[in-house]
Length: 234
Image (cartoon, rainbow, N blue to C red; front, side):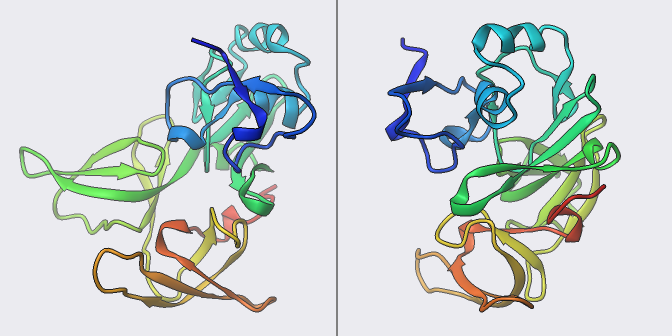
């Protein structure tokens, strides 16, 4: 099986130039599905911390590169929306955030903000014992007590060290959101109206902005955030 991926066919979220070469690295198995960007691309093409795969492997073997608090040794490990990247030796910390056109971009954050990550709840199911399992946008699952008021569409902030939920943002009118896909990817505003569509079609979300005309997108593309996720926290 090839370790290469044609640049012209990579997802729009990948921050790579499509016409500079024929191939790039293929993402390995892991979180974020097909939208996950191989860590090698982040190290080489985005940050310039490695010129090639060999240099990236050497850096990763030093256990100085962490994703969501865990040291990573696989240069093909997928990186995706709202992951936290920490370069301990450099004392640099980044949150993966939607950039222009839906491309993944890195936002510098401070060490405290790097201790937890945001997750959008995409599924909520009851499990044996009376608890509830929450499925997040990156494939992670969490078990919570049934009496807790989490719903699909809400966002939670999860501690990297203990997996505990440290913040909860409800998906509702007035919530601060960002679009992570579609024509308005990377834009931020407040939910003005949630238009419920009958049947199996996606609900529409009308988003207003203090500076800008606002926008309309489908519910799947909207993630609830707070003001700490929109820029540099330092």
